[in-house]
Length: 347
Image 1 (cartoon, helix red, strand yellow):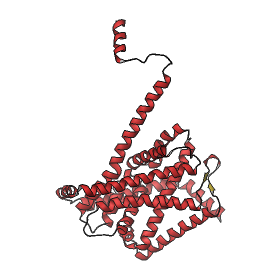
Image 2: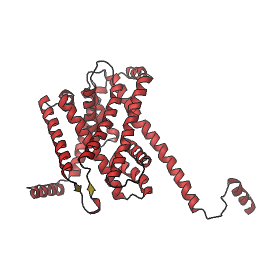
Image 3: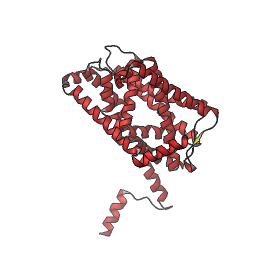
Image 4: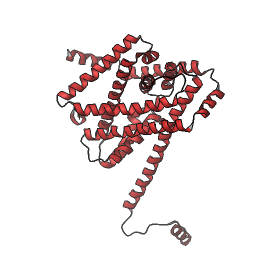
């Protein structure tokens, strides 16, 4: 049976190609989101949007910003966990935190995070002797943490409150509960599978030893905390009236995040926003859009600017270190005044 399944997958990939399906799916999601956003926002009152932005008090922004900071702090444990998983425990936490924060900030905004974030990770980890293969393994383990956390949060959330999911996918409540239960069963089966004995996937130098049962639970907890802090930040930025519970907003937020991730648009731009506005139809659209814009400012723009400053400063310091190492021993370091005198003497 497994041989037939593998043969079918190989045949399908050769004749059709999973990458082509991914591109078509991404374009379809982005196109639908663009149409939905146009229908929602074409008659929006810009003055009311500005008023909604100005009405947001600094306390709300401060609390939301604190939750965003906690989310990025949790993201640093993605890389730390991955480093320990692949056996590179000598890399200190400060390097893991630097690589994680900058790679996710750049990946979120540039798009194609596997490549853009992976390039940033390699630039940082290569100075500690990590190879391309090892950095790829880190990206894989970190991605696994993300998906395990998403499956847990979305599965438990939809099982408890299926209506928010129905507002997104337009499926019956019972079907959403069935899908959530199936996702949780698959998650439980995976935990049991890695709990029984060590599991290794991949071939040759690309082999990765999956975390065991207890470590997988820790992995899931890291993913839950990350998504929980992000959802709390969003919860504080949506309008106060009508009042919606945190679970409802969190389920919609995670679903919108996954759709944005599937679209491969930078930061899920357009897709995430359209999903949130469709599912949170109860809110005034100007006030809701103001909250979404502020969330993008706090979660995307500010970390991106900080990451560029950090990476730029690091490159300057590394460049200076290289020049010092290349300077011959005992050779005088040229100064601006010395260069001017030399030029005058030459003339």
